[in-house]
Image 1 (cartoon, one colour):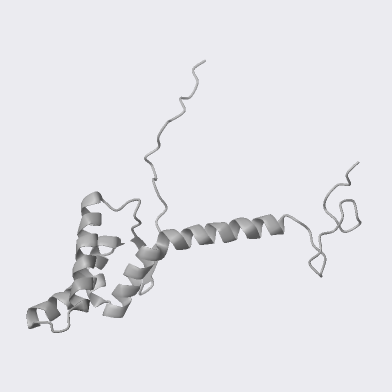
Image 2: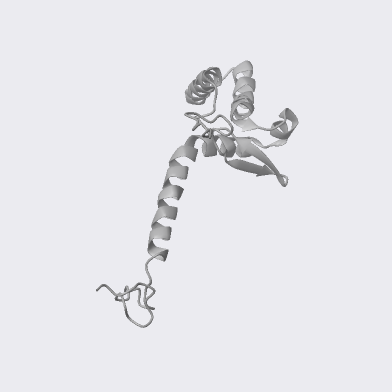
Length: 146
């Protein structure tokens, strides 16, 4: 009888991507785990350029135009949405997408930890005051310890 081989790597789904909803349509937000190295480099370069332009006191008209284009260019690198959808966003909305991309891994870790804590608490029966019921008491779901 042949046994089913155990895969050492499954490429079916490397990551469940977070979703940004725009006009009731979901679009995947890439994470640092799935962003290609070249797009990661491009994003970093564009981010540095935006910071440099924001810090500059007097912008030329060309620099002002560039500063207006940068959020859209960065958004295209991290949001899997058609260009016309990204173009229709306001600058503030594009910045929110970028902020979500940048805080995503930390936020996901915090949510996972919060979920773990809630699950741990929900597994322990409690009284209306929050005290844990002793094992074997009439309202406890835990078996008495012999």
